[in-house]
Image 1 (cartoon, rainbow, N blue to C red):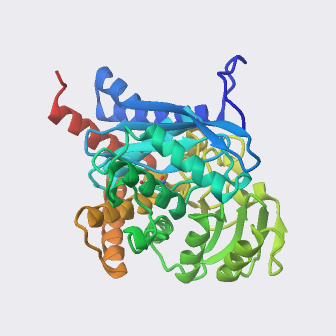
Image 2: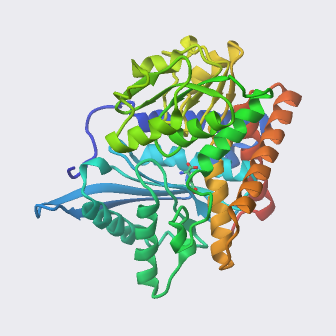
Length: 425
Ligand code: GLU
């Protein structure tokens, strides 16, 4: 970790810039389809608020490191800003802005009353002790304190953060307020007002979207999952539980393949114990990049942005892609996949289960009430399937891909909110 200074190297295309370019391209397409005027387009392309903070962290050996943190509120026209917090070494303002924009369309698409936001800290959490991580989280929260609150902006887990991170956020905010404010953050432990069903919500949503898109019995359907973290591991589990044959998974440590199907529960236990899927005895090792090109029925990219690009899209053989990650497919890859007749269930639909149950958690917190896991699951399923049906019918009616239709609906609802509210002053 070190102090980040603005780079003087000319125009490097960073992964963050690539993600933002993708998000802006998708917005442009939707805005053109909706016939939005240039002024509104520019408003939607521009975050309402972006905050960059320096976060000093005292290391165990007494050293002081300073890392950069961000919180971007892309849009707040339909309700409080909502979105996760990411701890990742390559996170930058462009990436966080793209992710915040995708949150805006996602919340609008599934019909929950939020705008979109995202936070990030450019740090590798694996390189920090638990106490260092706690200090980092608390200081980051105190730096972005003016922006967040249950009626303003509500963080949640994302890559590199979890329910412990959310507990520290809730505590830091609550201590400053002088009373407990559970609704400031979602994805908390259930003892602090977290919702039943939140931990596996994104994965459950991926399963619901995948089965809806398959439209046939999942029995024996082959699946490859890229990413075996919070989203990928449980998505593999739920798809396997539904009868699919999960034949390959990958994570940062490597990839494993078993033509007869992996024992996902056993692999999850192995990965939890050893820190990754590499070396799992009941499967063959596989090159991580080859996983994306396996001859499977369903591919679930559940890692990071930019996994499927123009460099590998033509070699993707899965007929159905269900995006567990945010932004895993670039617009160039999208065109190649569409021409090949591959169906892509886009991120803002496929991975919306997380923010849907975040919304349910927030509603429970605001009412100081809690629902059973069955009630949460029914509500999640209803919202996922409702959004899926809206996207599929608009795509069929207008000859759009599922991604284009999802963006037309999401962007259209936000544009309508702007138009109804009018411009102040
Ligand atoms: N980080 C998740 C996402 O990208 C969840 C966000 C939330 O629950 O607010 O959708």
